[in-house]
Image (cartoon, rainbow, N blue to C red; front, side, top):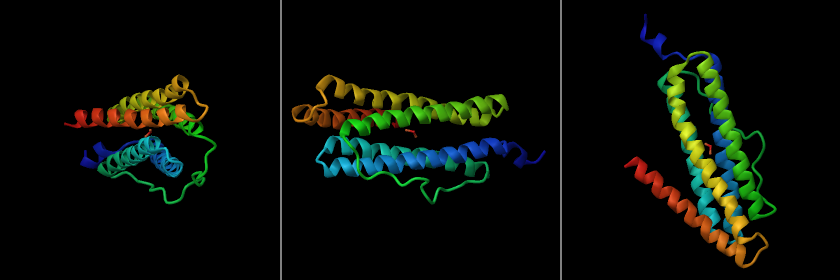
Length: 184
Ligand code: FEO
């Protein structure tokens, strides 16, 4: 049996992973666009949060690309966004509600791939996806916490938004520290 045989993964799995690459790419650009809006509006903490998330999404995309490359499977690099990322947003609260919705959607998408790879006994990809399952748990937790800050501090402008912005910056700093500790 040739070496290549062991490196193959089902075509359907390759397609699903390529769709996931597109999803991570879109998330990265959407968070980038939101970060720009926040920075222009003076929400420095929220901008820091979203720039960081945008970078994370790019890393997620690269992680899948490296995996497919390792297996010599086809990789579809997204060169065009399906829909241009919005550049204007109704409010800070609206942005963070959409972040949580997006992360929930990404989790559902990862779960769909996990379901499929188990069904077709692609244990290699199942093992690869464990990291994403854990990452999504953490990303949803942070996005949920961001929404809680609005609930706790109020979402009616003035001091509430100022404090929320500061807390969002601190939230992402704590997340970064955690990530760095895990990488050490
Ligand atoms: Fe890569 Fe936040 O999903």
